[in-house]
Length: 107
Image 1 (cartoon, rainbow, N blue to C red):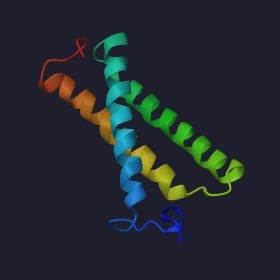
Image 2 (image 1 turned 180 degrees about the vertical axis):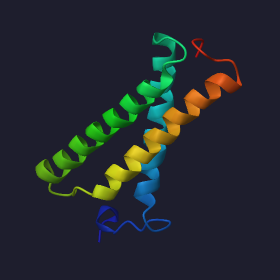
Image 3 (image 1 turned 90 degrees about the horizontal axis):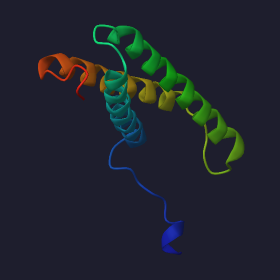
Image 4 (image 1 turned 30 degrees about the vertical axis):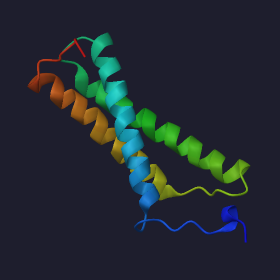
């Protein structure tokens, strides 16, 4: 058996969900920082909603495409949930930090 034929064993159950959550949390921080630089202070709540909604749409499209156009991957609704929660965590973190460390529009 070749090395590539060996099954991959995750370190813990649902390891991929944590990877989705962390990746989207990082994306949320980056998008949040961008939006803080481009938007007026005090109007962050609508932008947080847009960030999370955009993440939901993007993650859903990726999951659907993954299930439709690949043979080795499948769509998973829990990946979409992990993506959305990760984005919410990341975007909330950057908007929370803006007031705590004086970032405001200087991110």
